[in-house]
Length: 322
Image 1 (cartoon, rainbow, N blue to C red):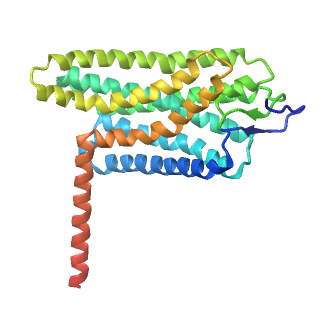
Image 2: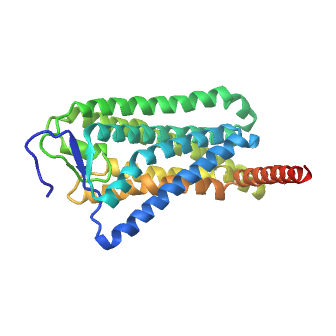
Image 3: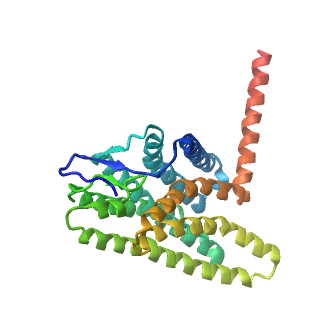
């Protein structure tokens, strides 16, 4: 059982995972490598979409936003997690904890809505292709993306403000590797009924309801694909949405499981493992799924490489000439 204190100190202790000294360096190296790969992979996606005119479509515009928020939320959590792992200094200031919780809640809520916008984009592209350019115009894409960021920001701000006024004078030990909202509510020494109610509503509105919209979109998409007569046409239609469907399955399963399953005496350890999956593993898989399973992204990589090396060759020859 975690120790208790008698007064408010203005800081928390993140208990993280129980790791043996022999495994500590290996664990630290593994998380650091994953963090660097997440940054590199998502930055590559952002750069590719920015440089390749063929990727200037609504689907890749949403993917660019998705990569940006992945970078933001892993950077809000993993660096502190790495510092705790290597130094064993578990302390985090109250303000730092609230900030960490804000950015994580902000980005996760935004990702739910971005994935929903991407599902709608795939629905329009496959089910009503003749009206695609009219329905999914540049203005509509920008509005959907901005709305996703705004709703995510507003939700995170409300949660953060509500938690900041809660008393935590009984225990300062957070049994998690970051300031998780659900875990902090359990530590509160004052009434948190209103926060729990809001959290449940947010899980339904930003989690379950968008998932139903995505599910409905894919029911129509699959129904349309089945009606396509040529096998080549069916394969092309399915490949255009398979990457998004894979990411949805990876992303939705873990946070919804963590926040919707009933609490039990073992649920905290389960929550930490699920959190590690969607904090480190899912953001790492996102760029891999969209690059390895998407011919348009692979083609963009080849075109940019050819363009870059051609420019480099011309520049080198010019320098030799002079």
